[in-house]
Length: 385
Image (spheres, rainbow, N blue to C red):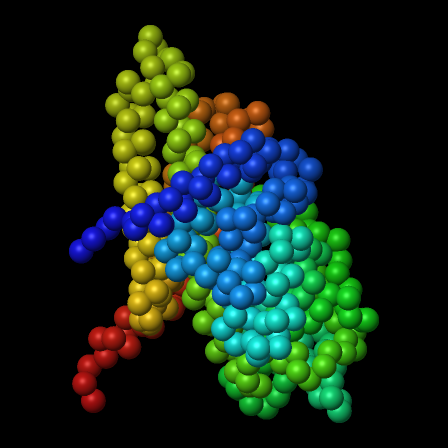
């Protein structure tokens, strides 16, 4: 069993960290305060393949393996939670479905622009009355000649205001149960599509999330992504991949929290000695480092399984569940080590603590991921019939 990265993966990781330390980390507080992504930094990301991590080179992507993609997400999360979340949604939730199920024409039409660094992609799953319950999706797409006519609304749609196209989950056959859903590519300049102003959020403030309203939005029938009636299955497969990426973001955020706490504990003095010399603080640091390493290994294990072509659904849910709950514990203790300063917006821990909170909600809540894991376990260990 070899836990080492290849030379290519290691060099890529170093290049991404250098980029993030230069272009993202120094501006993370400003990005959070203004609620605006640093688009000039995103415009430079194509040079490293960060806006086309697993998109074929023919369409402007880098065609990296899943481990490399996870390494990139770790570094992005370590530098800026808002930027990391938007880049994750762009790559995993918009670009990858088009790569996986798009026709040659769809790939040629959408992917080169999505990998240009000028825009970010988006996916529309959640609705005001349908979050974890995808079967509750009510946005309808009906056929009218050579067009789909879409009506309904979506909520919490990341990057919608920055996207040229949104991968949209719709109900195309109300009577077909799990095969009544389809994914449709909706260009954001279509008449009848309204993108509301971004939500005011607790964290990841610069990663825009919007309510969408579809009022007789017409798109060509050839904008259907994959097979009609397979939208729910496509969504679940997309979320499997996205959960690895969110887990990686959590590792990056946790890494930033721990590094900040380590630095502070060695600089701050209390009761005549450094905080780092107090056993109570040492225990907090030891626990945080152990949880961080466990989360990192589980995320990379899931990515490795994906690259091998295995069924990685359970591992992806495990990685996302553990990493998202680990980063909350690590951020909590790192802030505790800082005392009152950790509560101040002058220190990065306050922002990191807010940014990490969405990670156990998006891409499947902790509760949903526990259900996924338990069902897989029970299937694997079902008694013989």
